Image 1 (cartoon, rainbow, N blue to C red):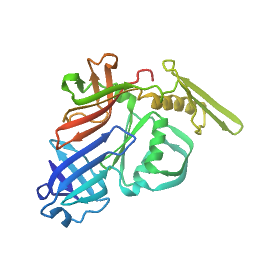
Image 2: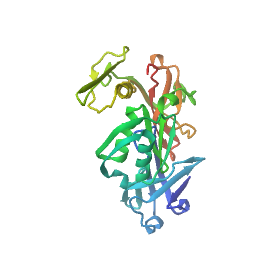
Image 3: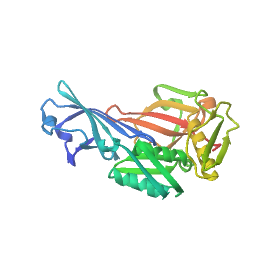
Image 4: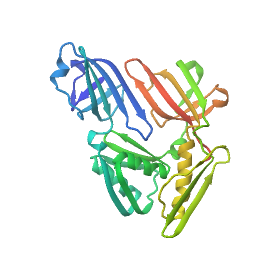
Length: 306
């Protein structure tokens, strides 16, 4: 394993006791937790600070650039928590765009925090007006992505936006059966957080724009978001995508397997021999316990109705 601190390999100067990395498919920053033994006091000589850059590498796996968010000293040990987002990305902002396309809006936000932008399968929708009001850049952009059915991933100084429906159509990278699971596991279905429909109603210049999208397979309340739409096309897209986002975790699983860095958040796995929970799932998040040799997967069943 390698630990890179501010472009310098310091692996041989510290004792890496714990190295856990959380890889998220989207909507949250990736994170790293590191516990270092520092009996020879090498690490403290570096005088680490918040927002310093670190990278973890192991067997071809690379965390990408992570920014130190928290630092602890515990006797002769140092604990580091780092995120894929820099500290200055947490600033709330207010601004507006007019006649702006989706990709240009995303590019403006990426540039604002010093990141680059990558998009995959993204439609470049045109908006007459978009307002960011006292919101953190990435929170605001993530909300726009959800409206359009996209995922926002923050990794290695990049904003990556992709159409998760296309990702869900990929072939499984791994088949999960009970005999390869380590320790406790669970699969469940939830109904108290699902909706049968999404109704969007917005008054624009004395005209009511209204659209309702229904999921006939779910019995539940109606989701009624308070959002601005410019036309019926936006209302149709947003209602479908918001309902999908609300219902996509109806079937969930959580389990450990032997450390496998070949699968990541967003990978498809096939669940077998689990009865009614069989099927293809997407990895919503995966925690790599690099020093313990195992991975924790949080998965959700792929939605086929949207």
